Image: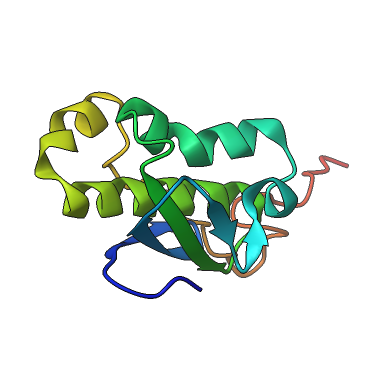
Length: 131
């Protein structure tokens, strides 16, 4: 873990929660004490996570440390992206128009719908038989 002054952002998506910290540095990116490419091994997820840095052109200006838990990899990637955007906003408010234009500051509110009694899943029912 890096020590010193940092900017923090919390991101959430589905049941995933990510705590993102930005330190002044050279661009290292760690997720749960592992390198980014080792944690998110799927290219589209890696790109999604790095989008806020690319939009604001800060790829090599900050070291990023992320603690993420809950949910699956896709939800975690979205949570990290939102947390990173919020941390960048805390670092410099001049990034707000760029991040807003790219749609990176809006939390996706969709959650899993609860299962209802008498149904197989939230909405899936047993097949109707006429005879």
